[in-house]
Amino acid sequence: MNVTTNVWAAKNNPIRLAGAKTIITVFADDNEIGTYESDHISLLSNETSDNYDGYILGLKINKEITSENLLNIFNRDECLYLPYKTSFILNFFDKNYVSSYKQYTKDFSLNLNSKFINISINPENPIKGQSFNVSSILTTEFGEKLGNKTVNYQYYDTNSWNNLGSDLTDSNGFTLLTINSQQIDFERDLLIRLSWEGDTINGTSENVSISIIHQSNNISISINKNSDRIYQNRKTTMTIILRNVGDSNLRILRNISIEFNHALSYSIVSIDYLKLEQFSPGERTNLIVEIDIGNIKNLEISILISAQNIITNVSKTTTAQASFKIYTPPIYDYFIDYFVIIIGALFAVIWISAILYALKTKQRIETPIEIPLKRKPRRERYVPVSELKKPTPPKKPLKKKEEIREDQEKEPMDLDSLLEERGLADKKKKKT
Image (cartoon, rainbow, N blue to C red; front, side):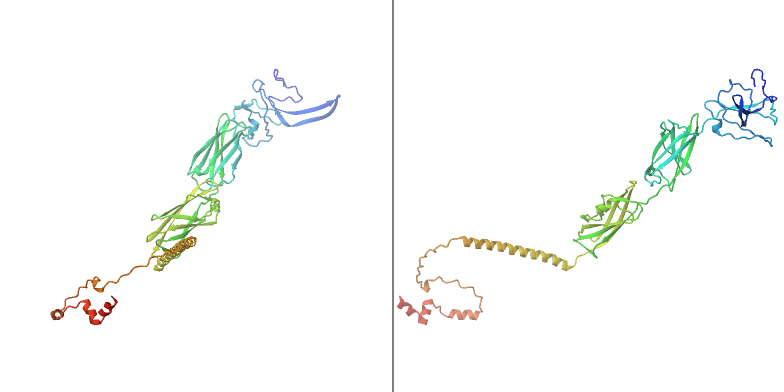
């Protein structure tokens, strides 16, 4: 059609504006080779190129209309051509291509929609208390990547969305946020939302449900005495049994706290540190504690043990208490104690005596033999008995009056007289 004269120079000259079907005939050296007939009907319009400088994005034709309403669906990629406007031109014509007097034109602007793609959770099924990463790519609805956009992260709890943080997309629209699930109060699975507010492009949001593994960090402690009775002023041993009754791998911390109701000294005499570093679910290990029992009547023991989840580093503290009666030792225990001391002392005396005897014997063997000095004979002299000093007579008990009188009546007799009486004086004189 000639725009200046509005004259359609064609075989079938339509009335007013109408549609046109494209038919192309191909010639070679004035010989007709073939004809191409388009399946689509073009729309004739009186709009000039000054009004529309762009591309025809789509064409919809309804050949049979049986209702008063006209409905045609255009996809967004058929009607978006940013930054220009999108125009819809509507025209009606009959089977003879006679059109209406006026074309109906509607212009409007459409913003592109955005979306998140390649949303990834690493690890895919994180453990409660463990940190995990959420990554995604922000693009337009046609796959154009959006850089330098702020993406917000939220999680759902108790009928509200709570902020987790935000990240800025790079030139490829990539965003990444690390989430520490230990700092979030939730149960079962975790629902998070990625959102972008939008600008000249419509914003978007995406909800992601994450399956969270909820591990149980539990330890049981039992305290058992290793003898039937615990006696005063004796040493005793107790076995502390630890069991991993949860479903997580734990590390038992070495700051094990053991307290008593009295000031008692103790020491851990047996412990498996290797197993405590990797305490798997269902395993058990023993700690043997030696306690110096004083002069007490009852013993109360309290144990506090801290464990840490190897994967999440979540700490768990477990306590246990036990009470035991203390008995007085039997008498034979004291005898055994003193018997050992006596035997030890006896052996010490024998050992010291043996050493002294050996030293004296050695000294005698090493001393040279000497001739003993002759002693002068001892001079003796005869002393008369009368000259001997009379011993002091012992005090006699008082006699009765009659006995005293009889003694007084007797005359005193000296030693010489007594000798003469016995016939010893003559012998003595003859010798002299």
